[in-house]
Length: 499
Image: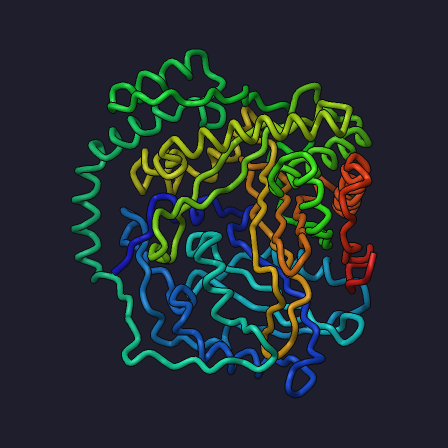
C-alpha cells in the first residue's frame, strides 16, 4: 500500500484545461545495429513485457479516495498490458517531428490507466526513428525516472537477459471504507502536521520564492532556525524579486518544442578555464540566450530573471521508491548584464551561494508548502491559485534543469541511442517556458518547451543557446584544448547532423 505524498498529489491537482503535468523525453535512435535493422512497435512491446517488473511505477494506476477526502493511492492495474501504452506513427512529411511531439505532449494522460505512454515515430532521415515517452510527474522524479529508463536500455546492441522475479510484488490500495477511515483520521490530525510544516518552511523562508521578498523574511528564517536548535550561520541569498517578462502569465493549451545537441566537451572546457561547474556554464548559456531573445522582443528587464533549478533530495542510495523526492534552488540569472564575461562570473557567484545554502538547509520547503493545506482543499484550489498567482505575483520566471547522464552509448531494442532530449512541465505559476538538458555520451541534449502564446519562436531561442556557447568559447584562452564539434538538430527538426 502506497499513498501519494502531498508533493506527488500537487502535480495531479495542477492539471487543468491548459496544463499537463507529465515529464517526457524524446530519444533519437539509429536502428542500424538492431538485429532486424529496424525498431518496431512489436519489438518494443516484447521488450517491455520482459522488463516491466524492473519499473513498478509503470504497472500501477491511481485509486481515488471516496469524495476526494485524501490523496489517492497507487494500486496494481489488474488488466495491465504494455501494448495498450505503446503507439506507432509515421511523420506525414519531413521536418514535422517537433510539431508532432508538441501535439502529443499537449494531451493529458488517462488517469484510469497507468500514467505513461510511448510513441514510436518513423519517417526521420537516414532510417532513424524517434521514441517519445511521457510519464506523469506524480509517479516519478528525475532519479526514479532515470531508473525506469535504465530498465529498458542496454550497453550493447545485443539485449541483455533479465530474469523475472520469483514473486512479483503487488501494490494494492485499501478498501474504500478503510480509505475513508484513514482520511478522517488524517483530517483530524492535519492541524498538528501543518504546524510542523509551517515551522520547517519558516526556517527556509528566505529561500522560498515570493516569500523571500517579504520584509523581515531573513529575520523570521533565522529566528525559526534558532528555535529549532539550528545555530549554524546560513549563507545569505541574493534578492529573488521577479521581473515581469513575456514568459509569465496564464498559459494556453498549445505547446511548441525545439531540440538539439551541443558539445559537452566544450562546456567542460569553459568550466575548467573559469573554475566553474558544468551546470554554471549551462546557466550562463541560458542567461545569454534569454537576454538575446528578450532584447529582440523589446522586453528585457533591468533586473536579473529568477530561475528555479530542480534538485533531487533523496537521502540514501536505497531510496528508489517511485514518486517525488525533489526540491528546488531558486537563483537570479544575470540577463541584465551586457558582458558575457560578467554574466559568467555573476552566475559563478550566485550559484555557489545558492548551492552552499541548499547543502546546509533541509531543502524540504517545496514538500512542506504542499502539505500545509488539507488534501480536499489543495485538490480544489491548486489550479485556480496557480492561475491567479501568474497574474498577480509569479514566484519565478522559468525552470531550468540540467540532468547528468551516462557518458557512453546506450541501446534500445538493438538500436543506438544517438540523443535524448528531455521535455518538462509548463504551469501558470512556473511560466510559459522551460529549458531542460541531459548530458549523454559527450553531448548536452536540450529540449525547450514553450507556450506559443508566450514564446512563439522557440527555435530562435534554441539558436541563441548555440550562439551563447560560441560567445563563451571565445573567452577561453587559446592554450586550452578545443573540443569536438556539436551534433545539433537542423531547423526542420527531422535529423541530427554534424555542426
